[in-house]
Amino acid sequence: MDAKIREVAEEEEGFSGSVVVEKGEEVVYSKGFGYRNVAEKLPNQKDTRFGIASGSKLFTAVTIAQLVEQNHFAYDTPVHQLLQQKLSCIDERVTIHHLLTHTSGIPDYFDEAVMDDFSELWEETPMYKMETLDDFVPMFRDKEKMFNPGERFHYNNAGFIVLGLVIEAVANKPFTTYVSENIFKAAGMQRSGYYRLDQLPENTAFGYIEKEGSLKTNVYSIPVVGGADGGVFVTAPDMIGFWDALLSGKLVGERHIERLLTKHVKVKDGISYGYGVWLDDMDGETVYHAMGYDPGVSFHSCVYPKGHWKITVLSNNGSGAFSIVKAFEELFIK
Image 1 (tube, rainbow, N blue to C red):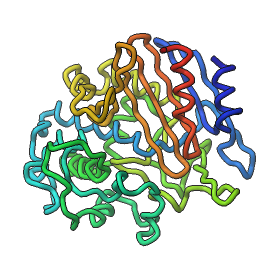
Image 2 (image 1 turned 135 degrees about the vertical axis):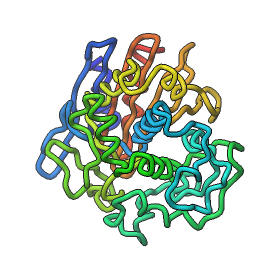
Image 3 (image 1 turned 180 degrees about the horizontal axis):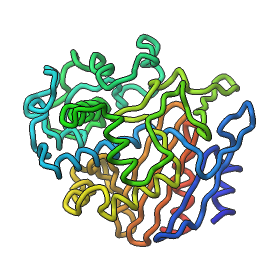
């Protein structure tokens, strides 16, 4: 395994990040590549913290499942009944289920179907002012809906911002506080959190962007602190531990685990979406994927139920994680 991953990481990709592979309950591979701080040549380690961009949506989905399990609302509850503020851009037929599956049709603040550079958003709106979920609302509040609820799948970041607002309204505390207490702490994710870019803890990787032959950090290219649709920092061991906690029923009961991992909407041949998680049909099994990409961020974490494999790849570059996952699959899955 080491030779193949090294070949892809060092010779093909110039990979910078961390890779951890677990089979059953045994960690069979764990290694860091490249630097978390290029200027000071500080190496990435197996337990270095990395941003995971949209991979964070899975934590939001599990938090919603916890609140449904506690009977605060149902998956088919209309969203407008739960929000403290009225958002006219949200059709009154939109439910929690629609938001979780990207089928709500509400307008997005960053539509990945028409924009491919997340950093462009912050040319007019200073990223250092994006500190709360409410700060994102003006970016989509006055836009027209894209389609009727349930009509089709369209990946939507604003939908998860709204889910975060629902969590805040029901829990009566900041979204990041609630998730830290009820997901990270419950799953034993002691080195993961919603860290501010200007207050990063030790052993955290700077995200790097290559421009005109030189590297710069992503500090001006993403919001200053993460939230319901992205921006969490995790370590690879913590992410493996999250999957273990989720699938063992430590975070939510079996009925809700099944709901999270149901193929609710087909995205394309062989690829479906559950609640905050991608579901990939591969050689007779359904593989669970959490993934995220931002300027200076590349993340992929997968569970292969049939062989009891789990792999997490974190990178502080904008690409590389997917290639490492594919190399692993060629060795052990296909």
